[in-house]
Amino acid sequence: MPSLPAANADGAPPRGRAPHRRSDPARVAVLHAADDLLVERGYAGVTIEGIAARAGVAKQTIYRWWPSKVRDLDGHLP
Image (cartoon, rainbow, N blue to C red; front, side, top):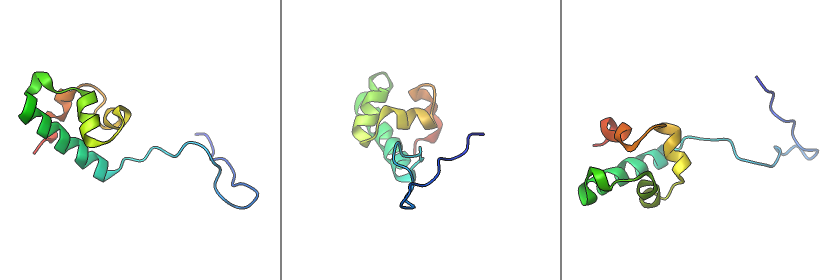
């Protein structure tokens, strides 16, 4: 397992990419966006790009939770 970089001279954590966090509010926004789009456009009209845009997240956020396709969201929708 790689070690974490040491703190900077001033004691602050090193700068760079933020760690990948799975934000619960983002997850909820994705689920609501997917549900809304399914109602508005039907299954065939739902895309990862559309869900991401509606939820205000990057596509990568969706793929972190659901690595394959939109149909994986099916069991998670209200």
